[in-house]
Picture (spheres, rainbow, N blue to C red):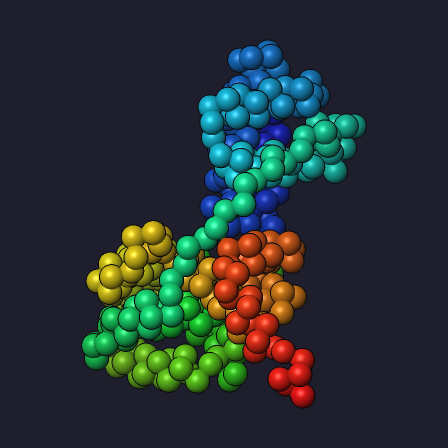
Length: 302
């Protein structure tokens, strides 16, 4: 069987499992790039003939191009998903990825926002119009829930419960995050202006919580632009990447600093593995741990 033919079946399988379009695109394009390489360099076009030395050759080719370990590991995940499917379906007896190891990634310190920067960003959108209050709610939700950009855009009205928000995350796994008092206040304001804004509009996608000016589901690009505008206007330091994902980093590190345990934080962030959550610890400064130790001192809390 030709690899490209089996890949179509694999993508269909993933689509039936409700994988995101972004994940499907990565699985398709990254595996196709691998197939082109092993065909040109090794003359391999079929699944049965694909061996680990050919895959390792492609990984070495990428390494020689000085691509980052993180990027290459992302590709390896795509290859693993495809060949695991082929092995589970009985198309191959041996999985060529079994001998392929992830590359060791360097310790990366993540610069995130300071508390003062976050306060200024949240207060930046302070108007009374629909878009002003919507943008303020976006900032509050990102900083006070740690949800991903795609999760934010996909929030529906029915996901709002009395005391928490139900989030459908990666792999369609559901998790809950609490509605804090600050969040609840802005939600009430937003719902009031939203109801007024859409009351005489037809064709609006009202099932979604956050709407565009034209009443459509928000795009991740729109949210990125809203966060960037706030960050640039309030003077966020140049060393910090102004993005929704940095808001998620801030949420995670602040939760840890305030005493949240790793397991609970992992659940709140929707991580499949607690080791993923541990990366946020690596970026915390030593002073953070010293202050945290004072707050959690056994004798001071007797």
